Image (tube, rainbow, N blue to C red):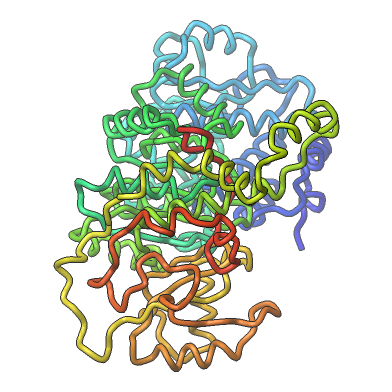
Length: 581
């Protein structure tokens, strides 16, 4: 097995990598780094976003740089300011033990005078966006005459953004260039054209087919009428209190308008798009990385510089015009071996777009129900109960206020106190959702299935706490029962239980077969969703009979009834007052 310590990197780099806790290179790093260390020829590296491309070229660059020489030896071009800053930050970490190394980033949106002053310190490595670099060349503030290594990072995106002529001009101004390394997520004709014009006898390294996505991503889509798109987004955010993610829009105007509406309604979000100045964009990213924001609303271009490993969800407020962009969006989650969810809000007319993306990324998408009001309240209820159960008050708090607390509530029944606490926490949510409309598109106009083969909704006593996702539940069912995965629909995975629909004529067989199975040592229990105590978010015989959301007993009554383990659950996050997080 290849490790960083087994690579022939200079000692300072090996020590820095060890300091950062990195041990095993990613697939693209394993293929590229040994080649570029031993024989730094021209190469093309094809790999998706988040696969470790910066280290794949950054470590060899720093290995070959001559610290004693005080001029620009290495140039890295990137499409956006955010990515430019990220590359500089990562390479600075790699070269932390190389005394005398200077890495400078130059990009638009910041005062050019300050960047000119930095260039006068004679950096060995310059990371730049094409537009700002050309501006500096025209001002004669920078010379590329002695550059030996040029890296084109996210080459496909630079070409998509219209930088082809800029790239041509920059490469023509590097007469001493000996090595050109091109990295891209896709190998388009435009990318190949750059290679043919400016590279010689290159080798191509690929770690995956051009348009596949991470298998740890659960792809879900929700069908809503176009005018209900924003309310659907709110519903999904409220149903997922632990969300830490990115909401993608197609335009800067949508990005700004949606984020403003969400902020006014108490959500902890912020926009990120090209019309914001660099100082503001940097502040947004600092808050997001510090998890002071639960979500950012971003355009595709602005999101290019986002490098966060813990993102749990990506939400496509609208599908991208180019299906290939979907792979870039979804690749923001499920990094570093973790799992993630990519949700897409689509109109009935866009179902064909989903099928097109499925073929492109070679993965099955799961149609999910937009949760009703009762499901949202139940989700937050279980989250709040979990917070109470896991709370660990400080000892000095108990000493200072114990007597006062006991005196105030001495006459209050324990169950009544619990009801009061939960009501204070959930009353705003209940007010919002007790009469919430059904946002799922197509219920009233959907043709009813033939009698005798209506869809049956089943309950199963397994959920997120058992390590299940939508895909893993479907896999468990199909591996245990002889049924096609396309026959399993409307899958809803909660903390402690799940629900799914199957053809009515197979329901009895599935219940009988699965009830004899175990999952991770736990006995499986299946039953009709209408008979289960947890409900199922509209568990009628078929979608045309979906009951109207109600604020009745599902919202009130004895709080203890919500403690049934089969009733639902939550996942992280918080809800304070009228704030949504």
